[in-house]
Amino acid sequence: GKLGSSDHSMIIFDMFTSMYITENTEMIPNFSKADMAGLNQWLAEVDWSVLEKCSTDSSWSYFRNVVNEGIQKYVPMRPRRSQKRKPIWMSRNLLRKIRKKRNLWRLYKDTKEYKNYIKYKESERQTRTL
Image (cartoon, rainbow, N blue to C red; front, top):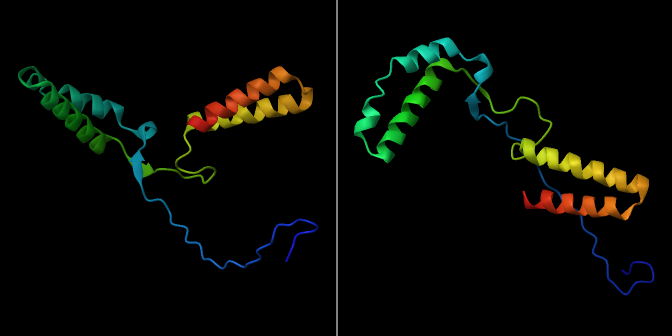
């Protein structure tokens, strides 16, 4: 059929889908509950003189392995996110940009000033690039 007096044809369809929500089981270190005294003591006992004899790449690899081992021993793990307020991919920086963009839009809607519109559009462009 046609939509009103338009020359465009309409397509009407029903879509039946099922949605599977999977819980994220990714675990990350919970540094707020870490045994920092134990970690500091453990790191103080590491033989760091090994780094002087190695190449840059092997020194970095050794350092990274030592730190990761210390984190595994002294820092408990927690699920990546406990509150379901935002998607996992939404970083804190992106969330700030979105809030700023919304506030600038409200400011423009209240004032109808062109300079506020320009600020909003710039913020919108920056948000899109993240």
